[in-house]
Image (cartoon, rainbow, N blue to C red):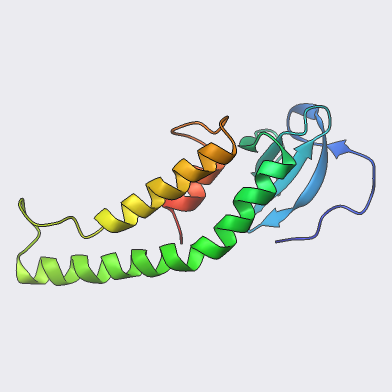
Length: 138
C-alpha cells in the first residue's frame, strides 16, 4: 500500500471532486471523497473515472483487514484448483459428472464477497472494486 497524502486539504480527484488520498495498491489510487466519505479507486495516472470501493472509510478498513488475512488462503486454493484442473485434463476427467476443479475456490470467493456485502450493503453484485480484487487473486 502506497503512502497516504500528508496534507489535510482535499486534492482534485475523479470528476473534479475533492478527495483525500489514502494510498495506492499497484497502479490504483484509493481515496476518500471529501463531501460523502465514499471510498473510490482510480488509476494512479488518470483521475477521470473512479470505481466505488466502499461507502465509508470504516467499511474499507473492515474489508481491507479481512482481505489481508484471506488473501493467502484464496491464493493457495486457486493454485490447488489449477493443479487439479491440469491433472484432471491429463487424466481425461474434465467432463460432465466430475467436480469442477475451481468449485471450492469459487465458493470461497462467493463467501468473502457475501461477507463484504454484509459489512457494506452498497456493494453491487457485479462490477465493483472488491469483485475484481477477490476473483482475480493474482
